Length: 360
Image 1 (cartoon, rainbow, N blue to C red):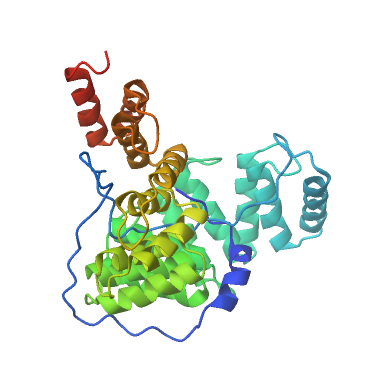
Image 2 (spheres, helix red, strand yellow):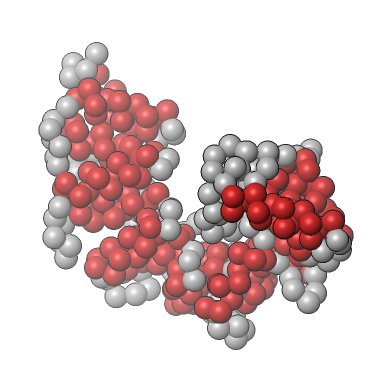
C-alpha cells in the first residue's frame, strides 16, 4: 500500500482544487464496460475499470543511499531534530519521516512511530495519519487495523488543518470493513471530505463510489468529473480510470487519442497498468498509429514495475515475434513470471508452449 506522506504532501495539490462542495451522485445506469488487454491471440488478463487508491507521497529527495548520507538529507535531519527538541510538533513529525525513510540518519521505524505519536498528540494531523499507516502495515508498532482507523479518524477530524490522507485512508477502511464496520455511505462521505481538502486520490475514490453506486446513487457523469479532477491533481489511478472510459466510450464519447494521453500520464505518475494499457493501444492500432516496437517497450516497462499482465504481454510478443525477434525461451520466462505473479493467462500460455514442444 502506498504511504501517505502527511499534510505537507498536499500543499501544492490544494491550490489545484476547487473546494466547492460536490453534488451527490444521481441515479444513472452505468455498466462496468468491457475489460481489455492486448490485441492478439492471447489477450491480457483484464484490468479493473475502477480502483480504490490510497495516498501516494511525492518523490522524496535522495538520501544518498542507506543511512541517508548526503549533505542535504543530514542538514534536514539536524534542523528537524533541533526543532523537535524545542517543542515544534510539526518538526517532530518531519523528524519521524526522516527516521522512517532513513533520510540523514539510520532508519528506525519504532522511533518514527514515537515521533508521529508525539506530533499527533500535539495536534499535527499528518502525524496521526502517518502513525495510522504504520499500524496498518505493522511497522515499528504491532499491526492493528482498529488502531490505524482510530489514528486516521483523529487526523481527519483535527482542526484547523485536518489531514486529507487521513480522511481518504479512513474512507478505505469503511469501504472494506477493515478496523471498522463496513459502511459504504460513510466511506463516500470521507472520500468527499478528502477530495474537498485537496486529496487527488480522495477525488478518484469518490469517483469510484459514484461509478459503482456504493454509498451514493450511481452516476457515471459525476464519476467522470471526479476522475478528471483527481487526474489533473496527480492521481495516477484517476487518469487510468478516465482513460479506460475514453477508450471504451463509457459515459464519454469514445476517443483512443484521449485515452492514450491519459494512460501516458498514469504511466508517468508511476501506475504500471497505465504503461501496459498504452502498449495495448499501440499494438492494436486504429485511431492510434500501430507501433509494435513501442508496444513491446511499454509492456516491458509495466512488467519491470511489477504489473504481471505486462509480463504476460511481453511473453506474447516474444512468442509471436511481434516487435522483437521470435524467442520461445524468452516468451516462456515472461509467461512464468506472469504465472508466478498470479496472472492465470500466463500459466495457460506457458503450458501451451510446453505442450507444443516449443520449450522444455
